[in-house]
Image (cartoon, rainbow, N blue to C red; front, top):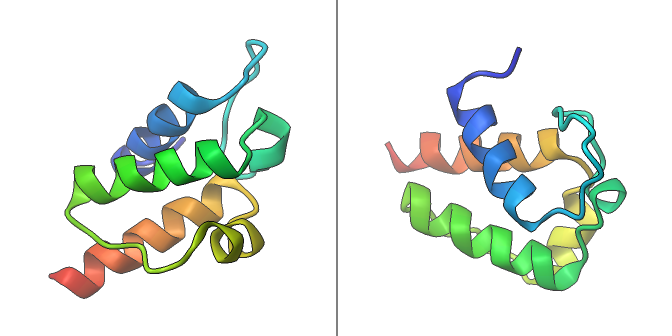
Length: 84
């Protein structure tokens, strides 16, 4: 069961995903959801706006570092914690 932050991030990812009714969990790989560089950039912008954070990486770096939903949740959680 995902916590509140995880679920919010999953919902944002789902808005950009090319899904066929499957469940999205922290282990779900972004490329399995049809998330490519343009969608990843849009998701990053959504997350920055929603949580008042700045994800300092270009899309190429992000694509290399953020392989699954859990990676994205962990990165956002870390940035929120650093902001506090």
